[in-house]
Length: 238
Image (cartoon, rainbow, N blue to C red; front, side):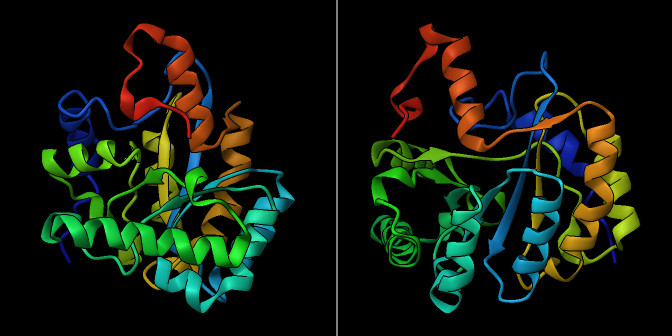
C-alpha cells in the first residue's frame, strides 16, 4: 500500500498561506499543541481513549460525526463531561465539495442537533468544523464563514487510519511536531482500534519535551489576541 504520510507536511505548508481563514496551527513561539480526534464517538475505542487522556490530565478536541453521536450518545456525553472541546465533522463523512449548499448546511445542523440531544450543548457553541478527508473548496469556506462556522484543519497527519502500526504513527508525530502543532488522530472505525495505545505511548514523550496541550478553541483565542487587526467575520468567537 502506498503511503501518503510524507506528503502531508508539504501539503500543509502549501495550503496554509492559500487559505488563511482556516486554523492550521497555533503560535510557533509557544510550546502549546492541540491533540484532535476525528470520526467518533465510538462505543469501544472512545472510552479507551478517554481513560488515557484522563490519566495524563490532557484535554483534547473531538470532531464528531452526527451519525456516531446518534448511535453512542452516552459516550458523547462522557467526552463532553470530561471537559474536551467538541467540533463538527459532518453527519456521515461525506466530502463537503460533493454536497449541494443545502445538503452541506443540513449535515452540519443535523450533527449539531445530535450533540445537543446527547450533551445538552447549545448549537451556537458548536462552530468548529473539520471537513471530512480535509477536502474543501474556496466556496465551501465562504459558506462556512457565512454561516458563522470556523474551519479547522491540521499540521500533523500521521495517517493512522490506514493502520501502519502504533510505533510508526508515534514516530511520524514525533518527527513532525513543533510549537503550535495541530495533531489529527482518529477514534472511529478507521484507526480507532489503535488510538488508545498510540496516545498512551505518545503523551509521556510529548510532555517530557515540554509541550502543553490546549484545545482548538484556545488556539482560536490565541490567534485573536495576537493579531487583533486581522480579526475577521470567520474568527468571531461564538
